[in-house]
Image 1 (cartoon, one colour):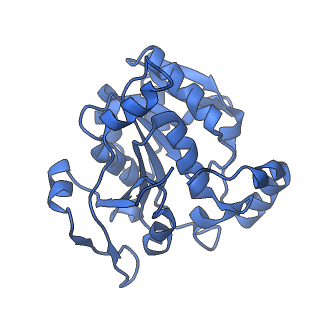
Image 2: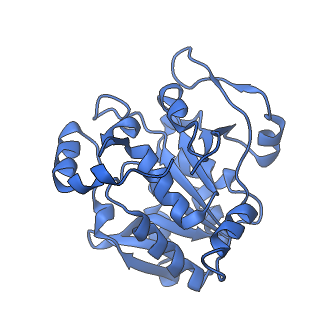
Length: 259
């Protein structure tokens, strides 16, 4: 992928349009981050996906990466696997499922992380309410979904073993019946990454604090497709987790994402 990073402050679509060309205040300390609005359109993503999948349906991907990385001790979004930041892997993999329609939700350490996405082609959404917990980023991602999107792929930046093929399988399963929720199945239960149809956006908007989107998956279990994805069970919370992952994925060193 190529292109400049676009950053938009969390808010309503009208708020984001008004923010075009304006600077957004930083989220940590007194640091500021310059932002401009350029949220990728689902129609563009659909055209790109249609080149390889004539039956593709508009899908927007949101990577949740606003956490403070307290247990890791530094921004884990920038840690490297195979010489490449994990957030680059996430953006590249998401693009394989959603084309150009990818947003990265940042919060803590945004001033450090945003420059690393400058050439990624993804939009960057600043979530000023990141201290509330995961739910605030989920709500921000829903608000950032471009008009006309039929599905929102939510994924976590630190699920570093999830592959592009995993996300393609998930997206393909959802496209077979866009009325259904499609979620990864691991550790005996469904979880993120998951694709939520538009009718589920209101449920996601109702989440608060550290409430996980798994709540929505359980609530609608009768309309849920579970896609086995053992790779999603791994996330990186500590330096020890990173060492363990590195010992299992040495092959990634020769396969950097196309950013």
